[in-house]
Length: 331
Image 1 (tube, helix red, strand yellow):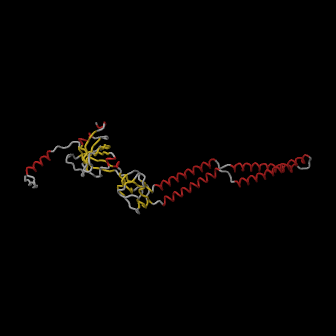
Image 2: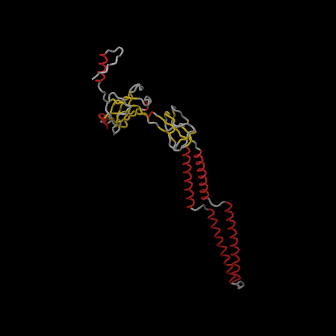
Image 3: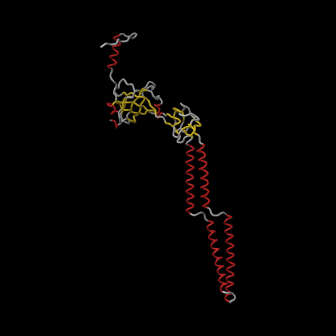
């Protein structure tokens, strides 16, 4: 077979090149060292409602505290709904209060005056009846006349009873069923107010945690669909290591295992704790170039460093991961 000539190298003889080639080919593979990279799980902050983006309070790279303002969407519709719900609540509470009260003072005064008038009429008819009975005993009044006077007196007495009952009712509030219905309507109105105020607050979104702004996905003036992320936040707790182990060494790793990672920008080994080990094998990702692990099928493993160490791991940085210890479940 025809052999291609070896390239010349300044300062290196042919024998030195051959020696280096043999050393590289025969170097031992490092067991327990896996290739991977730094990955992030950003928090994508969105509003459940859509609208035009009127204020973007942060820029990419900003550090924000928990509760800091991120962005605001237009609130005209939600503000109008909140005002309407508040007005309906006031109406329902006024109706409930009205049913709990009796008649107005002037109405009560009119009913009392009518009752006094009826009592006076009863007193007059009672007096006439007594006088006519005396005349009837002396045979000066016919029985028919006495009967008519008796009927008028009974009518006056019934009128007094009617007006007394109406006055008692006027002093009372609405019926129990009506008052309960009014109270239920007030509760429903209060719930509608709370819902409308919640919807209004959702249009002005604050940071759910202290983090760095990884990206902003919309610009002011653009329409944001409901649920679409506007700001992406990256906190130290969202940085993890993702690496791949061959099938022969998968059993050495389990949730709780401790690994150490090294990278060009780390400045030293960084400890991380394994939280996830894939149960299904996959092919080696094309972005992983390992000189030690040649297996085609590997298992994905994810480990999380401490937040203080996570700041030393730039996202996307290749890392070498070495197994340090295992938990009781993996032994």
